[in-house]
Image (tube, rainbow, N blue to C red):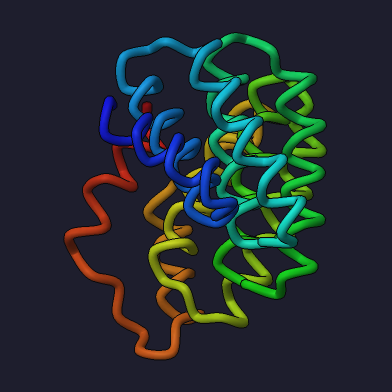
Length: 190
């Protein structure tokens, strides 16, 4: 971390906002790995400020994603949900479909954890439609697993393997890598 602190100081002297934001992001990520949540959150908020200042939509989406994750870890779900709505708007503005899908996943998970299952299911299904358009197979598998967990919470369980079988028809190749199936089954069943 001393290296990133040094980078931060150099960037502040030179006025290099792009790398200053990166230095904040890296320091926040390092602190996350040590579960120093409040300090990590402070660094990601500094990164957010820089991203807003230089109009870096991609960096802003990443910074907000880190904040959502930390706020979830701290049990501050309402605050995390507010940040996820902001992240979604930012990602949609940037037009990056992968970022939009990640933001929707964050929001659906938060809503599920808050017990707002009907809303979570709506968000998950909207995301699934986006992922179908982009043919993102890994994202589709993740969202189908999340959708199955939400349905279980709504007392409408369905057999997850039927969802996977149905999903095969959605992809361009019709193939779902076997390596993806095992992690999905663990996510769905546990």
